[in-house]
Amino acid sequence: MISIKGLRKKFGPLTVLDDIDLDIPSGQATGIVGPNGSGKTTAIKALLGLVKPNAGDILIDGESIKGQWDYRKKIGYMPQIARYPENMTVSELFEFIKNIRETGETNKDELISYFGLEPELEKRMRTLSGGNRQKVGAVLAMMFDPEILIFDEPTAGLDPHASVQFKNMVHREKEKGKTVLLTTHIMSEIEELADYLIFIVEGQIRYHGPMKELIEKQQEQRLEGAVAKMMAEVAA
Ligand SMILES: Nc1ncnc2c1ncn2[C@@H]1O[C@H](COP(=O)(O)OP(=O)(O)OP(=O)(O)O)[C@@H](O)[C@H]1O
Image 1: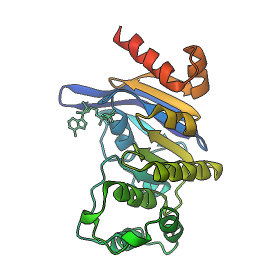
Image 2 (image 1 turned 90 degrees about the vertical axis):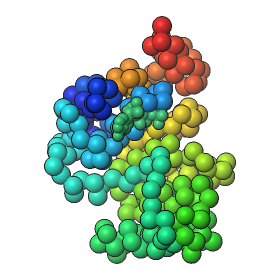
Image 3 (image 1 turned 135 degrees about the vertical axis):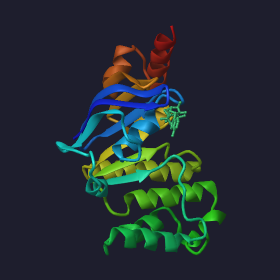
């Protein structure tokens, strides 16, 4: 279980996360949705220790992450915009990351084959297409078989085939009992993958609970309609 307690983050005068309290259940997939700039990526970065909150805490399995690093081994992260050592080839990058983790065992080869990345392995990162960079990001997030998987807009730039492959992979990971946290603006994707939904607007949580309950509450058939209604309510 990931518990977020009273989390606040300001960038200068701008409050980006405004006293957030949340429990993210283990072994389930949670989708984070909200307008551009509402604080989704900042919340993820706080969880990863990449952003230092002004107040509040995050607990993973009951333990505070403050001043801790080791917990990050439990997490695989696929960022929205990934920066890599651009002169490295894809295989060099995978080896490099493996050596940093000091672990012999990874799912790397299976994932490379799953995403059809073999023809890309000897190419330098800077020469990869956007979609293939995303696939490299997906392999890096999953190669150490972490308990928690965080995907920030994972299918942006993936072709339809790769996007379906990615979603099937997320289903597989869920079946293995992984905790998945996902942000995307593609509501059908959240609908396909997520059990729980967090709706965040201007750094405040407007809904947190089972996705199906939200759709019923808003008297809609699809998540897209339910979220659009919530956005209209917030704007009114
Ligand atoms: N390092 C930073 N310095 C200053 N402001 C920042 C920084 N990082 C994010 N912000 C601001 O915080 C707000 C929330 O940004 P964030 O990236 O968390 O939004 P988001 O919900 O992920 O948006 P999107 O859907 O567009 O990806 C934005 O107004 C952004 O400009």
